[in-house]
Length: 188
Image 1: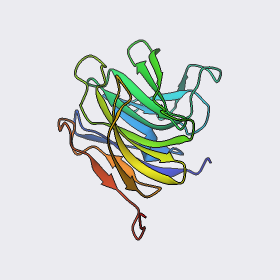
Image 2 (image 1 turned 30 degrees about the vertical axis):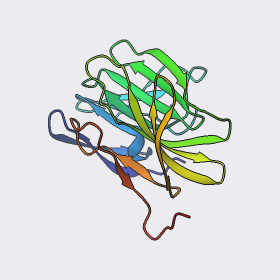
Image 3 (image 1 turned 45 degrees about the vertical axis):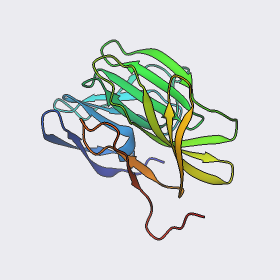
């Protein structure tokens, strides 16, 4: 907690790279236009910095309404931020008004712990999320699951190792999932 590292945050919309000094891991940093939003892995509010003006971060909200995210992703051209908590709550935040629009728990049983997610169907201009991929611990094993958000039905699952990350291939590619597993691990 609190270890400073140099992190590159790349904004694909304007092909700029902003380098900032941050104590947050890269999967919890989102670059939206000229701003950088960080989601600490503790129960504190989202942090916003205008990257071109300063490296000072301002809190969005307070500790009472804060969530502890395992992953945040932007959608709809940076208007919305979608975060996933370890207990399986998806939180949709409007970055224009800084209001929470939706909170939905996607757990199908109480033993699930969530580590990562990505969009399978990219949301368009509205924040409607159809299908997501998640890395979830189900009791004694870890799976990558593809879930329909409307029904929470698991459409596909495959065993993976703990520490697996989901990477989007591109901003425009739909239905492409790239799994990155730690080197030298075995799945039983």
